[in-house]
Image (cartoon, rainbow, N blue to C red; front, side):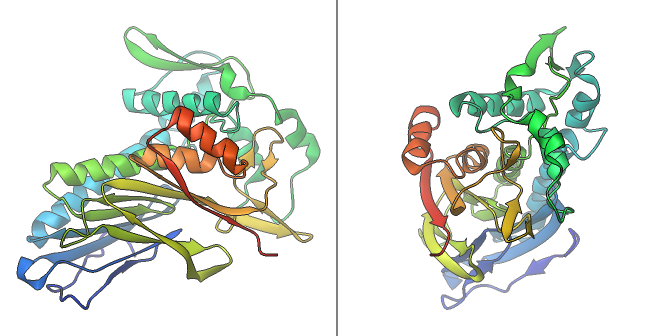
Length: 336
């Protein structure tokens, strides 16, 4: 559905259940009591290369739609600033210019880059926002065979994040690349930031109960109803029609990274979109999906990407040191 689609349920009864099914999650909860006289307003739109889904509980449907409009505007703004697919975005301009001269970025983009570099340092480069060239070479959404090793090998194990300089010039943030192979890709963190901005837009509009679900990144605003938390079901990567587990979430974010959405198969092996900067290729791991819960979706998104395939004890150590508000809630491996 496109962003003009507007779906409203009548006032709830206690027997009804809200279910959202975009990306890695299904959300189900008992709704508000009928006496609350509230409605559920749902909208979807394509953004950031996936589908954003909103579910807002409010007494006034017009106010709910206005709040969703504001949240959608935030997601589009983040996409315009940080998409690597657009030459006119700040990330796109940096990728064209920053190896030659400093490229200006907004405070928002600079903040997300700074967070990404923090995760790169915390994981010794297991998360690297500068491997966009490798991501572009693999292009798993369109490829059917792996790219030549001659293209991949020169990008492996480079620690390219160390060649990105985030500075200021005349009081404004700028980025520079000290290595011509640096290509900025905020795909592992910008979507989470966008979800946070969308949730904040809902709050500013007076919404206190909502779900923002953008692919594998979700924020649960407030409570589902009658003081109960939202119940978020994690899809089983072996069977998208089934759930592998369920967690309760209230004013918190959940993000999942997995090998079962963006991938191609070649000669019995699955090549997914989660690259290992050490090899410049899809990460070799028995893990099919990893789910992180955190106070913000920016942290949950970055952590789910950074820690995917990392030994669990090591991953939990990174969280304790770098993101103590976050926790690893589910790791799903391959079937025997």
